[in-house]
Length: 441
Image 1 (cartoon, rainbow, N blue to C red):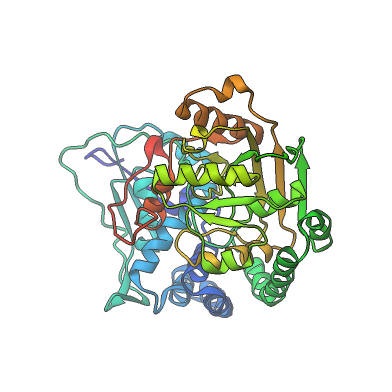
Image 2: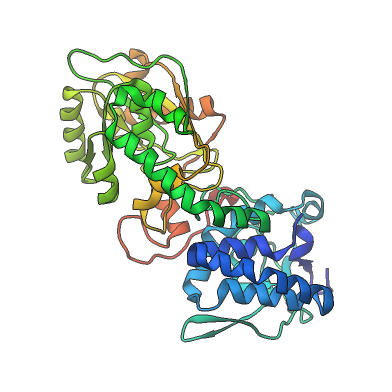
């Protein structure tokens, strides 16, 4: 802490693992895919040699060049906002951070990491006032991969210190990127070698799901390495009309695995999925218009035809949280059966907010041993079902969250896309990025 009331912290000292390779590998895969990751891995021996013979800074410059050269600055900022915060948060040391928790003065973070990659996390998750790191050189909006002279020794001067936001360990609700775990050099190599086999395996699994009868999938998928765990008693098929099945949303495949667990096809309503996903879907999918009155009438009509599944969160959430439920489903007459869904991806996430959603099923099925856990929670009693729409939606959200051990939040689909994609999720209009409530990101 200096005489002006500024707490100065070196970013690397806050992390359990300050090695730059895993974080640059995440950026490389997010920005350029497997070829960029391969380029980074090929330069790793040279980086290691320079670290041992010259300096750690020289080695880090080589890796930074491999991960960022030719990448647009907007793409790097997008990766810094959507991908890196989760992994930074997981690597925070509790002990070094605790002395600053609730400290009333300003926080300045200095680092040898490229500033563009850590600034968003430090300011929005740690409450830093100023971030000083290595500066990436750019040309016409694209990174050259070269680092300019660092100013780590130059500290800011403040005349009027003021309180910053409380600094609890950050809670990450939203994040993006395809990699499900922090890539060490060995993990990165295995991912590169596995991808051709993984894509072939995903093609076979998707073909099986699309072509085989629904009542056989629960038995066929385990033979293909896809594990489905079912708990509770699924609702029986009704001779007249159907049951409204309400579940949290983990991937686009939720209705397919629910159908496999029920051993019969069901209809799913969606807000927006790619044409490829609609084409490959082995069950009927119906698009909602986002007009509340029209959508309610459509869902009533579909329920008269049979079982209907809806995901009231309106978007997927990877972390152990359940987003706020829309009350539309709760305003429909009929039986409601809540279902809790959890996934265990392994290597790849089968969801994206910024990429091509048509690849979501492929990435999920590219995992060596993907797992789906489905918990049928019975039907809501008529007494509960008679509650008002918002109360019923909140109750259903809490029931599903409790069954999974997840936390309920007030965050919505729109919040997610504002954080991860800079849009409202429905239009390509850029909006101002907002900090999430109670320190969540």
